[in-house]
Amino acid sequence: MSERYSFGYRKERARIEKEIYRPIASVHLKGNNGNWYLFYPYVDSGADISLFTRTDCDLLGYNLKSGEEHLIGGVMGGLMKVYIHKIAIRIGDVEFDAKISFADREEVPRLLGRMGIFQKFQVCFDEKTLMVHFIED
Image (tube, rainbow, N blue to C red; front, top):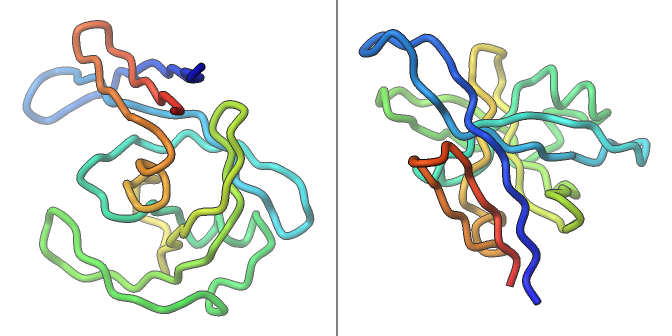
């Protein structure tokens, strides 16, 4: 029996249209102190790896620069320095470790990317009902 965890899209202002709906998930990341912290990142099938901010790394109690340093690019083409940490993540009742990147700055959207996440679930974007479904096999 597979488990399904569904999350609604969030209405936001947009440049092209007056408003747009974007897929958001409710995810918990485990802090260095063993506590779970709730975040609401965009579910981004175009993102190779999940991305969070420097402040998120601090909140979780991890040393930003102890992670593996990389440069990543985005849709705008510029490169950004990130530090990758392997962290426990929880979506619904499913708990697992995933590589999470933390930007060396604040001005980034939180993204739930494919690496380590999409392998655990079938992810279905339902634009008709404005829901994103994570289905565990």
